[in-house]
Length: 132
Image (cartoon, rainbow, N blue to C red; front, top):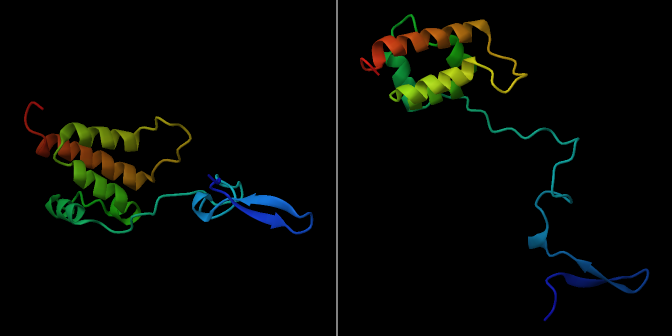
């Protein structure tokens, strides 16, 4: 039984040379990992609000329209809408945005922090069921 690697001949020395079949080679280059010169991999940035986020913005009172947040961070508005009806998840998510537990994070601009704080207060007073 032959090895999975195909054999070719090195013409300069007339020696067999094993080559890796295309299916076994890593995609996109010779190495398995990234090179230091490669740009960092980042997830594609969400630039639009989903239907749940739009619905959330429509039910919020006029003084809490999250203008700075939706303009600069629509992905976060989408996630806030996803956890809106789950008080513990909502609190945990807002805490993770406002409190840096990983260190060396730049933080949000002040208008975004103010909107998140105001949104949390509104959620605690008006959305959360009594005693929860």
